[in-house]
Image: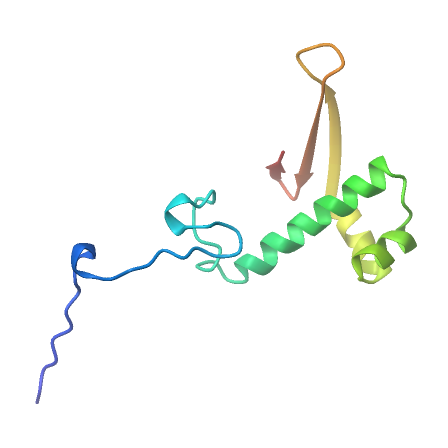
Length: 112
């Protein structure tokens, strides 16, 4: 029986070029607490949440209808309806006069 030794080199002895991804220029300066590629469907989930926030914003601010939003984003009307159902937007007065704070909530998680 032959035992193979796998060497786990310390970072000082490895050539590693931090190229990042499409969301951050380098992994060491990434704004996310964990890599989106480490989570199952992490990139897909992040992009979908961003798209859904945009849908809600356009629906509330630009008064776009469901059919128009479906055409803009290239998705079905049912997908737009699902996004609107999952998100609720709360507008609160800010600290200074004329300032507003818009908070969007999704399934118990808070995004600002």
